[in-house]
Image (cartoon, one colour):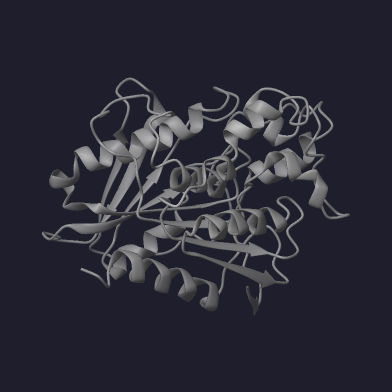
Length: 315
């Protein structure tokens, strides 16, 4: 396990806060802070990049089933694709805030997706939407010059949880809902930034300054699965990426701050250990001094090298 020492870069607030949590609940202040916080600065796009907004990946699904597509100008060859999945405690977040868009300058297509939040529908609606978005992208790969064999999923926090699920459930059709069911939702690489991986062990590793009681009835995880985690362990297991780990999973890059007081960094260690046991290529990098957010040149370079190695260098 490699440790980095670098300044923490935590940037812009979420562009919009929709359907804020009920402030009467005990976890509400922390939940609201987590839901409105996207720890990234909006990256600049190349001036000639093509942006296609509000593509409906589930017909009639509404604005939570839209995605934005960022493309290099005048692309004709099939492009590797990064699918960005936003965070926000499964309660808020927006495709408009997409730090992955900077990869357009490196020759990638980038898709940023919305998905149903926990106040709209409980799990598995969220992973069903993510898989539907990937299937839609594959079905339209020729139209947008995408390479259907080179897809990566990248997300942070709640988005990290969902991309980890994308990585570990690529060999099952359990969560197939929506259109394009003849297409695969498998991804070829995963970048998981500080995502929960085993809900039942969140409280076990919580820091003394934790912002959440993860076992409470109003915890983000409880609101996602429809009840307190410890009283609904079967539902929690169904939502845990660790449940589905197998040797067929794609390579993972997992990154986590060792001072994260929302998602304990041990959650990433648990996933790393499970992937290693299954024989899946995985790298875990713990960032010294970082909380619930990552950034900086060394972190960015690590992501670039991982994605290039698995999506570009072999083609």
